[in-house]
Image 1: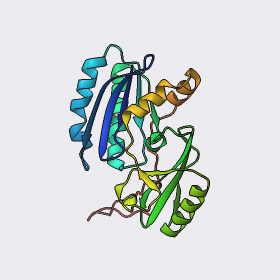
Image 2: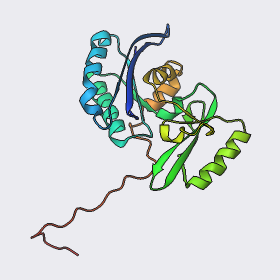
Image 3: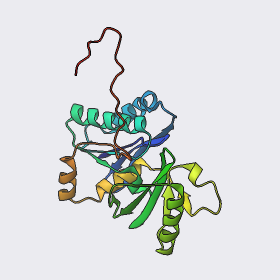
Image 4: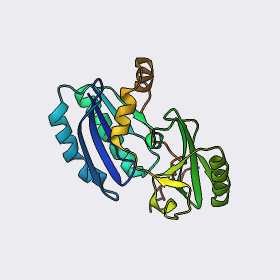
Length: 218
């Protein structure tokens, strides 16, 4: 049985899938701004009550998305994998927004920039590309000419009725179905990879400010 955890957006979800039959045995969803850690443990407990003895795979969405949400999902997935001795993998959350073989995802990357990511075979083809708004518009025109659909997880990018961007929310059940469709070699390869968020930029780290009385060093 596969347990899937998706927490990269404000609309989080969990699901249990029986991979052989394809039956969805259970699903749960909740919504929060920055408090996924306060809401995720009740549905996790409910899932474990249903599948503890049969669970043999875990998958978690890696984003991109909210930093805290993704980290909560990864922490829960890693904790369950360790406690239950069950293998776990991560997949890019945006790569499962559509069933199409190839599509594009865009989103707000903050600091007056946007990202554009090309998806093929439900995998990121490269790191998301950062660009300004004007460049994004030009890229979207080219993509439309190529017949590719453009999706986003953010409502603000899809508000304009004339926008080519369609709103989609990553779903845990879509993650589970991707795992069910994998062959053994792909699964084994992914289990060797550490769970790391899909970052749009390198984490911003600063040195702590010196405190009164600290000894200065050269």
